[in-house]
Image (cartoon, rainbow, N blue to C red; front, top):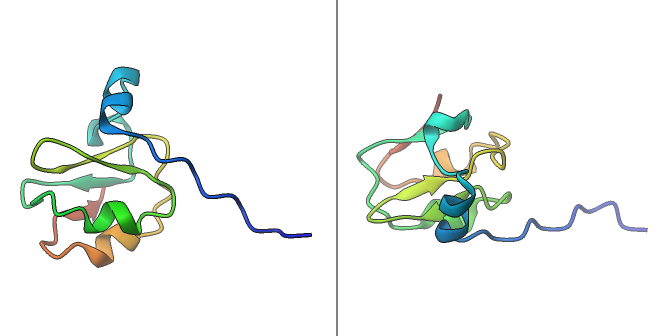
Length: 83
């Protein structure tokens, strides 16, 4: 019996926007500031699929982030921080 948790399904930015769940102001434990270049390094690193591509920057999918800090550590521009 495996105790491994299944990987969360990815969510597109369009889906997240349509559901009204994207944005640092919605209680997400991390924030992405204007230093974000939209490179996507954090998106591929996030084990919870809590980040989505946006227009020129990465967006947070509220309710998915568990504050593992992997995105903070991988961000080359230092744009992600805890709230």
